Amino acid sequence: MIRFLKGLVLLPVAILVILLAVANREAVRLSFDPFSEAPVFSLSLPLYAILFVAVAIGIVVGGIGAWAGQGEARRKARDRRREIRRLEGETARLRTYAPSSETGGLYGTGSDRAALPAPR
Image (cartoon, rainbow, N blue to C red; front, side, top):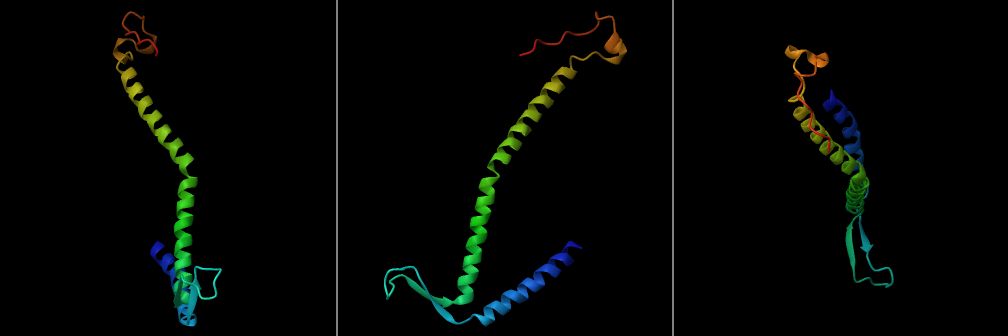
């Protein structure tokens, strides 16, 4: 089902990209020198190539921005995982000191229960 939906979305996008490339295949000058009439740093490329490169750079920059923006959430998740592991270890350690049901359980006489270690 997901494969079908991907095809349903990607097929029109691919058709639009191909039409854009065919319609804009004329070479244009891309200049990196805004101050001179005869720019030293310039390229002659098809317009569709310039557009594709611009979109690719936008995707990369956007991905880096999203990754950087999620840093706080990743740090919180890492801290919480660390706390969960610590608490699970403490729970396992305390279970060794818990009274068993054979010796009276939670409401036994108290003489058969092991003492818990002092809190840190």
